Length: 275
Image (tube, rainbow, N blue to C red; front, side, top):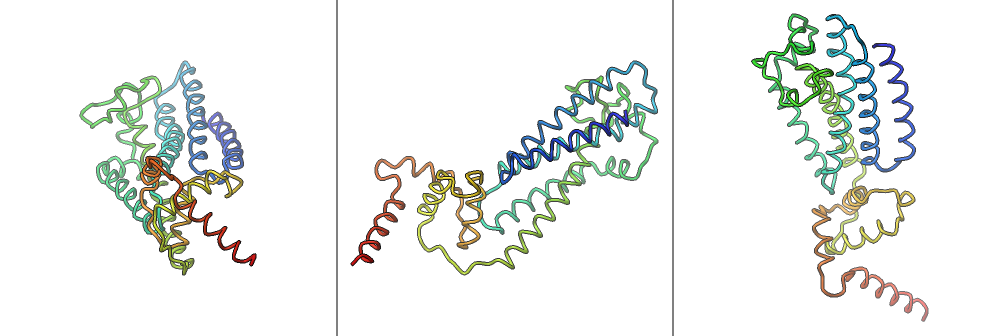
């Protein structure tokens, strides 16, 4: 299985490089496409493994302890990143740092709740491998995840998924910590002197108008990125932009009030300059 896994790894890396170009500027789309790639890879891995007629215990343990968790961990990682991007609040660096710190806290709690297995796996212990990484050898008293009871038993042991979670969460923890540092440095080094003193509703009108016009990154920039940069440049906590937008949509008259005012004032300035 090792040669097959290595060839599959080369194939998936090529696909990841392709979506780096097709999803440029759109991190949510990148994570979504990565999920599909690793979902397909796991299906291929499952098909290849289950087609083998004779598998001794040593090979089976190696597969479910090292090979499969590496693949599953990547699917978990990209799914977690996708969900985080979907739920990431729009706002300043401080807002996003708090959000990432909260995610790290959840990860740390998971490590605490699974510390015995975490130590066993990371220390390379082997005395419980037959319970953890052989199929149909699970002991319910070892506190199995509910996932196990609905999983395909021909491609699942009691703990291969938990091993994958630990690998994914370690990577996720490291990445989020680095991103918090980056946001902190950006906040310290790129502080703008501009302060938005108009209404936040007006800013939301402007942001949605610019996003609809597609004036950033050839129209490929996410609304969330525009909101984040507006908050950073103008030193303002914009808040729940989607809720504000729905309130704008609910207006009975003059929905684009701020934009209409901008247009009127611009035309007045133009008229004054013509005199």
